Image (cartoon, rainbow, N blue to C red; front, side, top):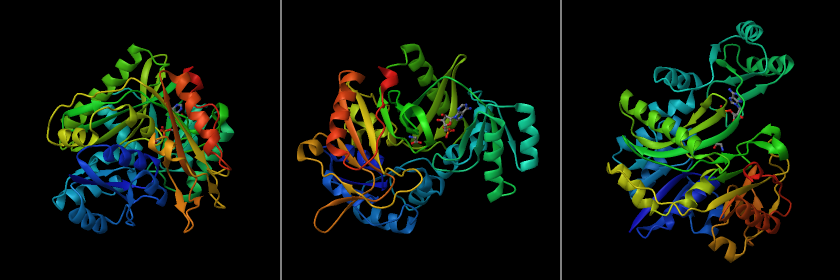
Length: 414
Ligand code: AMP
Ligand code: GLY
């Protein structure tokens, strides 16, 4: 039997942990730092920060055979390179490849080198230059601060006033901030994810996140309020186009040398002129992972280790549709205070994998409380998106209590 360490703390990491734990080959799944609510789903949180590489390496050396990295911050900081230098087995992109997520300019240059379709963009470093370029490009326009921003570095400015406000905000903090001004694209968005190691890969079904806070895609951008997969509103041609862009991306990484292994997440916009790549994330999406992993019938530990061993793996899917809904703090994304009570899920719901904790504390008396903005992911499945939504929302009504959620996850696919 093997033990696995998952790095990260959210519902994505809970989904990964539960998937590893379902493997016949896996005994213990540790999550660093995890959250205390994870104990309800059989995972073992260990209090090590995602950037404490020495602590993580020491723990992995003593207790596990495989480490899997959830979030982008340790990847961009080089956790994979540190583990490899220590002779440990880890699944995640190396520091060099992580720049595809860590720097939007790096990603744009990569796409240009490999003729991958994306929105036209130009980079500026001062407010003055940004204003001149804005005059030339006009609105609507998309303004992207370079670097990791937890989904909050992008402003879609429909008016000149919105654009001026966004630029003033960025340059107030840093007078020489690298900023991309990007052509505004319209169309439906979808995400496609793959696990790869060198030139071997498996591509997962299309998924669709709901990034805005409120119903009808209103309000501020968040980390994600709910997701569906497969995203049945996209036809076979569109799925094939998305997969082709993924294949081209993996080929491009291999052409550049030292591709390593990890997860590729492409955010796509299906425009009138075909799909364009909005962004690369070099890790699983949250909350997309929670609707992707349950579709996979392969033993997940075997799948990951086979890829690492250089094998081409055939993905087996169960053919069902999944919908997940994020239970968030009513003040999210502005705040996650005060702490709120979290409804304890029944044993039946836990056994069905319908409840995954993102930020849940357990009080000494066993009561659950919130410990962040996105608190729990609730999942439903069915033969189609209609059935999956019905089940997800029936569970949400049981579990939401004082927490907030969007009521329209998946309606676009109906
Ligand atoms: P990103 O973090 O780059 O995916 O951007 C966050 C969100 O901003 C995306 O999910 C889109 O909804 C929107 N967005 C990003 N780039 C563009 C673009 N070029 N045109 C229109 N919307 C965009
Ligand atoms: N759900 C969007 C992301 O994980 O970046």
